[in-house]
Length: 358
Image 1 (cartoon, rainbow, N blue to C red):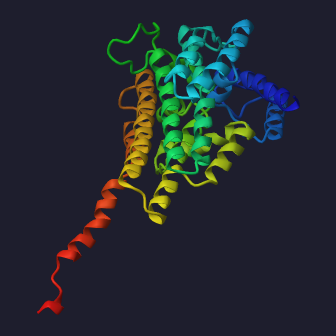
Image 2: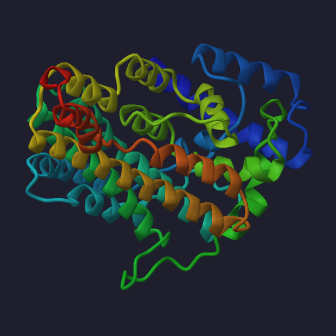
Image 3: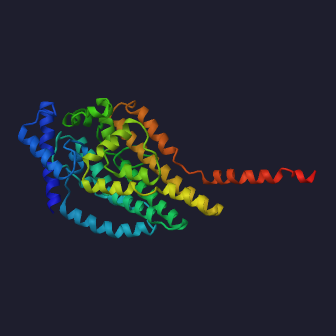
């Protein structure tokens, strides 16, 4: 389509712009004609005319055509089985099976770490469809049973993303299979030259490089945080996540905007508890399903943090990461505790003797 051709043109221009920036070292010293073309195409796509990992990774890969055709056919069959709940984790194995065949179309560094980073994030992007499908089911749920089931599917979809990190050697549990032989710290020591610094964010260059890696997965982080009712927070990671949205395709931003216009599943549950009487068992199921999603999302973001630590110093982003983790943890529901707190005043009043008895 015409839109796809424009996206492809912008990707090719981004490679040239990135190479120029790495060679010259100044983002505002592009040749006038190259600058004009880059701005013109970016404007046509309603995207900011600036470079990011979206351009260097998510729009810069290829895979064997026969394998991709087989992958797409298998995905349709396996997603149906996963949706029915008979094969937990099928999606993760499916994405991982194609990871080794992903290659960068344009190499900037010609090192194994570049291929490894590209494979990881392209495979993560291929699994976002499962996350989005589960999020849509959360919003479409009409009763407690559907809400619980939708949140369980969301938990499984996030778990698939966690397992992709394991396959790439990030935060592997004890006894996990062999991991790729790469030195992650080598990558951003060289790749950062292709990405200009964003002074308007008021973030140090070292922190900005680390945050680029932490948030390199597109809109999925913002989508998962909204549906579970997690506050954005006031820290560098949250600022960059919002700033980065202007680098993403218009369709992605439109979907996120539409999503944010809807009430989170957390708020839906809290409203339902306040408007109608639910049984203790229903409250327990809702609380368990929601908090399991929060725990799984925390595992996902912990893998992102471990990826940052493997590529930079362990102290990088620590202060901002602690704030992000606190925002996620504080989103847990406490429905049963609130129910007991609401019931206690009534029981206490029942024990107070009436003055009419004297």
